[in-house]
Image 1 (cartoon, helix red, strand yellow):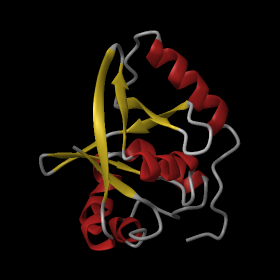
Image 2: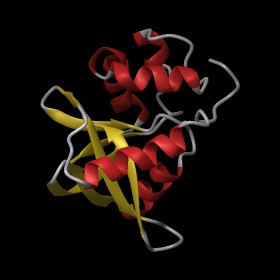
Image 3: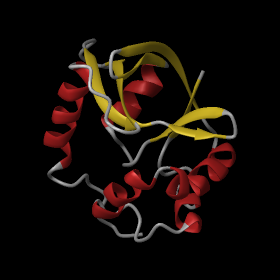
Length: 145
């Protein structure tokens, strides 16, 4: 794994575009928008995410260690998940390192769109399931309930 663990420069502007398109009612493949109250500001913060269906449950992987949305999710424990015009209140439960391993191992197969972003940021070097499994304890994994 590379030492560079910062999101690509284009990610923040693209996230704003995705959020705007989603709010206008467009569905963008597997992209959803997760809105969580900011832990400091108290204001709603929207982040595009890829929801991963795995073994009958829905998950989201925090693609960057230390991401603000992950910190907000830990603090709030709940949010609103949107896809197009559909909105759903969700609770987020962070998985332990051991619980996260099989989810992370399946991530590059089930959610290949997230792999390229994580590679661009230097979080991973390849789409190897072993490399993703090794992110347990580094990148947060949440289950939606």
